Length: 424
Image (cartoon, rainbow, N blue to C red):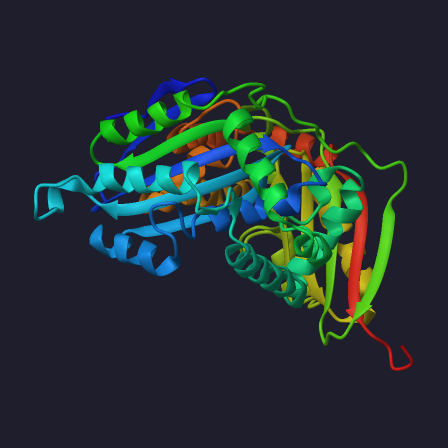
């Protein structure tokens, strides 16, 4: 069987991703709306609220009992940035029908439950219940505080904020604590209705058999909604070069400093257009064969870790490192020196082959997990390629294309998170 794509309703597509390696079926409802800095906190809280209860199952206890009845089905949700779109996901993993004892269809019943969560929330007098909102607000604040406490992740968040400025892509997905505390039922109901009416929707099913009833259920539910102004999935903005390099230093109560560098790229968009960027970042700072690992971390011992990663949808590369304060500038200089080496072609063909093998092995690994397969087909919009097709594209990238990709890299922002000094 091969990937099957079908139109379920206006702006709603169904993706059947066949895989018979698992004893479960994973169904996800993926909704994409434009990034909006003013509503991001509300938009990110919404899926957690929706997945906690619904009209039929008023509280978490009732909902968990229903999940146990469905052979221990597992609910999941997330809210993430996807290029210039905000991606809201509700998902359920349930045992395949052929393993059910009573002749029922757990897959169809799981789809019914997921639709109930999305289309029929638990309202009280026409509004979300205050107790439910307060619970999810508290959990969201804990997520934000967890991000702040994880200084490696926090440094990355601060780097993106400085790089993108007023562009909502630079905003933390969960918003700020102040924004979360201001969320009320009216804002959530408005966000919920806008989501159902205007989002581009992708219903994905990773399963060994075609879940016809599940797709039919979602098709019927979305056809009952007045759909309009469907989110454009083709639109994206790449990060432009900086007129001058930003250099920011902040100090916190930490023992190990963090360094995060942001670079613009002249490659962005589909994998076919920017495959060389993926290999460049891997050769620069990916596996143990990479220049940042071999030279900056191992030979020069300038840092605790040093890695590079690329974001094709927005056309940028980041380098992250754990440092001692006295080595901060040395690491910046070393990272730029290793980039110049790649620009000048100073890397072995064996490194290119090692990088291609690493990337293609990672692509093959998507088939080892239903969650990973679902992520592959939902985390990016635009031209669709399978993991196998992506591997073929990667293998065709030439040494010269990697060099050209490196020459299109420009430093945009340097962010240092360093320990507080004694007098501060």
